Image 1 (cartoon, one colour):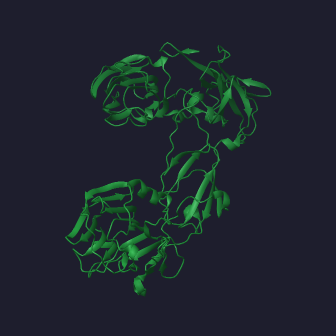
Image 2 (cartoon, one colour):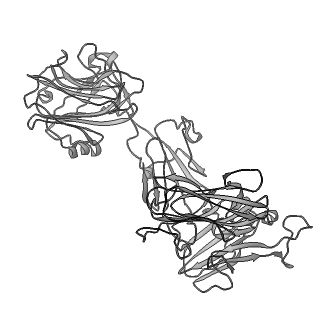
Image 3 (spheres, one colour):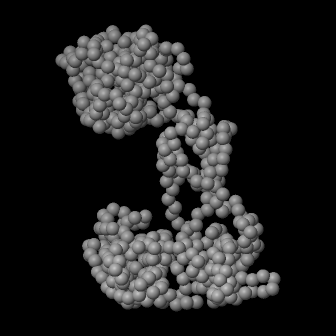
Length: 608
């Protein structure tokens, strides 16, 4: 036991190496017979000789766990009613040598305390009486003042932090330190207070000087944040000609004195044990030490489910009593604009072709600036509604619905489930036309057609509510409803018919009788995750990491995985909570083009 300078103790043990002839208390680890090397020193989370049944460490030989030819060490730590076994893999003698690799401990140990039971914090808390909510290694104390979340910390107000470790001094002499923070902070070196920047205040600087010899010195930085902005930055002007700068990460170490910190430097942690646990000659636990995940890749059989319009294409649906659109109507359409297209384009039109003032129904998209235009005409004239620039973006799917209620005199529009228009409309009957309903085109002279993909159009002779519109897009349309005048999904595999799924049989014709105007059948997207259990993987590999960023083709190196495929990775993940905690919050994130999701223990934690 070694006093930690703050009223507590740190626990250390020295590990000697030997052979059948016995232990060697002074091994030659670095291959230099002129130097005397000490046994390896471990810092432990709990004591060895002075431990209790509920608070102790036990060190034992574990055999060659990872199969690399070097015997490994098991440290069994019991705290409270649970135990953790930390495995430290063996290594060549030179890697154990004193001072051989202090960089393995680079950075300061950062402890973050969220102070959930505090209404406010106006001074430094008693850090040693608190359990940290987050423990990590920070390369520097360099957190500029911010009004947002403190970097990587789950709390932005009423928290405290402490950084501990050693600082390496290369030139003896007087060193001046500068500590800036919001709110309070202070700096200790070798347990001597050097800078005191305490109290509640904005981001201000305090400084102090201390004479230091060459070598390693203990360093401790403490800070607390009450409310508002938060930040803390440690700088220095070291002895010599360097000048003022951030204290660099190459002189900061969480433990640079040839001490192996089992809590932070172990190779594997085995958790979940109840009561006291011992480990010896543990055998091969290679499956849990990070061999990777099984990656399975599936080339999918997909069918066309949409139409691509090139600006001169159309779908024409002949006029009928059910498609007159002179009364109350709801029009639902799912579409995606091509990039590079410009100008006003016709999406859905029921018009006589004479232009403004004679349109039964018209829906337009401005493919230059993302406006939408909705209009209808009655005997009085045309009523129209502009939705502003930026409403639409190219290469994004949109689910749009317009509702014209000629009974209540209301008009609404919804985009991806959000109401974007709430206005009024005259209750008179709309002008009638015997022209066909056109999808992706217009009868009006000089009006170009839509350029992009349309994969679902539904027209109702009723006013759908916001809830009903959302359900239509999310769960599918009730094709048996007598209010449904027409529903076209464009899922036919060939031919030029656009099949109406409603009870009225208002089937359309791709191209409207013109071969040059036939839109191309198109696979809009893989509609949902496949049932992996029913599929046989096209390819299977072991992936040490899931990191496929911006792959234009040949995904995972397979030349048949360019489009319309799915992938699944399965295996185990070992979670090592820093510090003495046995559980804590772990954040997972997925970045993907198209959909992705993450399950942990069969629980969905990310759905993108």
